[in-house]
Length: 509
Image 1 (tube, rainbow, N blue to C red):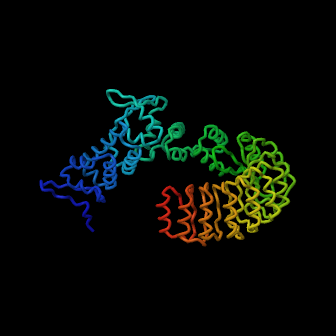
Image 2 (image 1 turned 135 degrees about the horizontal axis):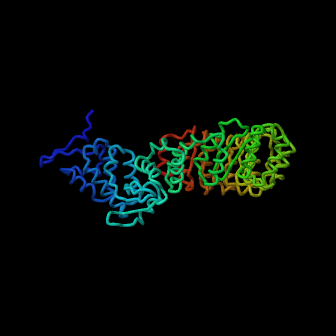
Image 3 (image 1 turned 90 degrees about the vertical axis):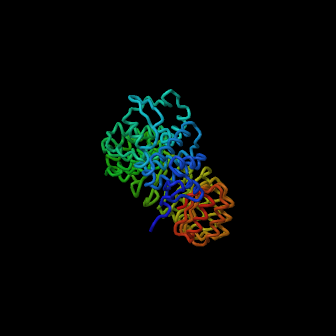
């Protein structure tokens, strides 16, 4: 099929000129041009129009190759106005994205209009590409020094081999040769990418740095990552460490925390614990190993312990009485033997708990949920698949835990109707709510969205009792919502498009 938009137009003056494919009607007037110079002048009536035309031209990969001078002229104008502070960051970002998406055709036409003094060399780069690499560089460009030979900035601590890797990423959105570099260079690129707030490059560098993690050095690297707040590298180090059979597993959550879970108490596990003890914030114990003197020794030696995870423990043990009273997070999920009396002991032992996970703890009843009021600072409660929870239990929880910000009721199948009114009326501080697998109706969903003014995350997965109109109206009522989970719901593709138009920034899973 012929693409008539790409056919050249013949003018009265005898010239023929082809135009980028997919040229919108709003730019049809540029077809009055008889040559490239006139075309650029018409497209450059203002910077927004010029940017839009350039994006369209860049997307038609054959056009920049057929019109190199016009393409170069557009990039020179956009770069000049950016360096002079006339081109907005939004338009600069759009232009740079187009270049990085088509580097083979466009990079050679981007002007290198900025001088950078590095530690051991002077280089010339594109101000447009550098200034769109990170907010820090955009700010740096605004104060660049003027000289007869152009504008200058200084990065006196950065060697040229490190900057070359960053320049590759700046030009193409990836650093293809970084994998060839030795550890010191890759690490410097990683550190510079963090310092300069270059999105995406720290993760790319961390994916290469992980090649240098070994069983002999991973403990030192964990410490170094936490000390320097190297988040992406920290995540990779923990992944590698978990491939070693040492009796412990590491859980990644944030750079502020280090969690290790004991699988057993072999010598290597204890050695790792002792080496990392000043850095550890969370501990986990799986299965029957809690009923062991070493459990007591470990947790009582942890004055700074923030969180404790006790999953699939066989039964209550008096060793739980050794848990520090300062504990703030307790995950005692997957323990169906846990009774209300057991929960009472734990609550009294750890009155400072802010986060409590009782997932699948089906042995707790009305009396047990009443004890939660003793946790005056409780902010997060997980009751996933606690099938026994009914409307009276939820009322007791809402009345006793008014500070809740995060509540997970997924699969609590005895809740419906009045339950949603109860939690939206009594827990108006909620920011994160999961009612997945529950039968919430349109009216209940709309009322909940209207009352919970601070709600930013809502999980409705596998809820099947509301309609397209219900979820659309709920979203219209929820101005703070940022993340909405709708997997396996009856919501149509059209309704999701409507939601996206109402809340463009809303993330929908």
